[in-house]
Image (cartoon, rainbow, N blue to C red; front, top):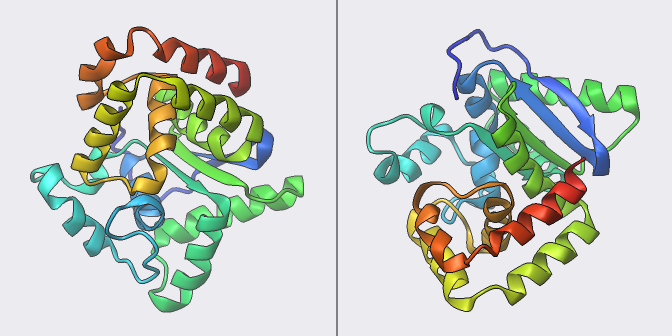
Length: 222
């Protein structure tokens, strides 16, 4: 799902339970340009933790896997812990400056949080009405924002078939998109909201175990 509306429009911001903030975009390119640096600062295996990361750095890191496509064409959702988000932008604003899409995002979040007198625990982003992506990113947010949700998911991860789990980790490792520190988060989010890409090949090895993840997600997402 993508939309070609352009013009650096700010996202619609919604406050959700657990201090989760949802940023909804009309334009995929605007969303990707707002999040690409902070997202890769959070979880990219080679760029994580680098405050001076540039858009060019991100494009170069993904060049082998995107095979000629632009970053802005390939991603439809984002998720970043609030602490990481705030830390990155507090430093990046002085080290590298901010792009227009990033500034619009920060201003929209600040306005929403001020109205509701809340703090940012976790931020997720999706295109408007992309329900599947919103669910997937919400699974990431709940894993960090709700200790009860995380406890149940970690229990399921611990008890799942070891071979299937290692096969999923191997896919994450070979894809070059995820730092090892987020593999369990990625695993639970994919099993809770639907397998895609190369993970579909693991479905038979799971033997239906993914439905236990989906039940936990359904219980908490409302």
